[in-house]
Amino acid sequence: MYEITPSVYLELAHLLSQQVADKEFFSGVVSCDDGDVQCRLVCTIVIAREKWPQDGRAWRTIERILPVWWELQTIAGGELIANDFSFKTLCRAVLDGEC
Image (cartoon, rainbow, N blue to C red; front, side, top):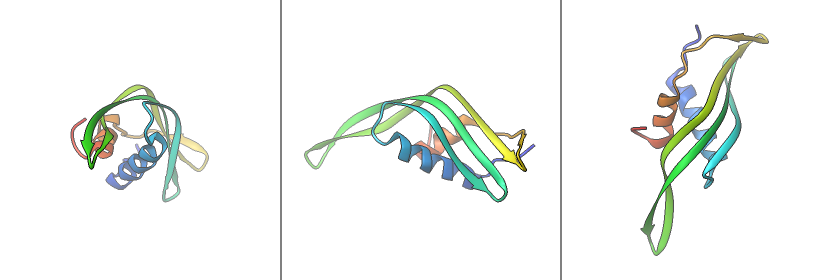
């Protein structure tokens, strides 16, 4: 089984945050390489946002990420390999804390 490292979680969280931007719904793919293993997150998520004022503008921060469907594929040498991915751990990385 392929162990998903903290650095992979952080990379996927960063990529997902970029794709989500200010959206409230995302359905797509983000992927990164960890050595010779490709980690490919396919997901459909709903993003709950909280509005709060700062400097005279209303900011919409991510409050929760609600997964509708997700799958993390790990691919090495063209073959799918099992992994220990946790969506909750990814969610914590995106939100810098509790999910």
